[in-house]
Image (cartoon, rainbow, N blue to C red; front, side, top):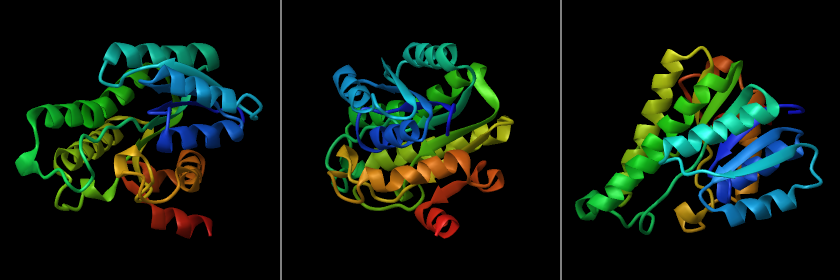
Length: 230
């Protein structure tokens, strides 16, 4: 990924932090953004000796002006954006214990605003700066497609994110697809699942080596990645 210019949202922890490390270690320039500036500074400090480089910028994907500024920074510093990883997300409550029947309106609204509209904002604000062959990756999970009890409006918001990805895939010349790494141990899963570092190479593969026809408007899951790279 030498010289690749990438933007990763939700980069302060979990999958976003692991993907940022994976990309920077491989030589990419990454604009890492999240709502928590202190965590971003810790991430940048840990990557000072990596092959690539990282620029951190506080940005809340619920605020289109924050995201606009982040994309402008990435393009100003390193040229056209080659890869966007729309990863920022929230989960209000305990995973598996938030049925729609008991969901608060505030939780429903923020899930949709962050996990759904946030993906729209991330892609929308990247458009003026995308390279012609850029790839946009949207993080998601199986609850977006397979109903399970207790995942409430979080699942609804991830289904929205996937629909947004499909819509942009249909509209853009660049490739836009969903990456589903399975259950990963993050704040959103109550730390259950695979270590984020184990699935970060999957995002690197999706950003660089996955066949474009398999990515655009589609879902790349863990099994697909393992088959392609074994």
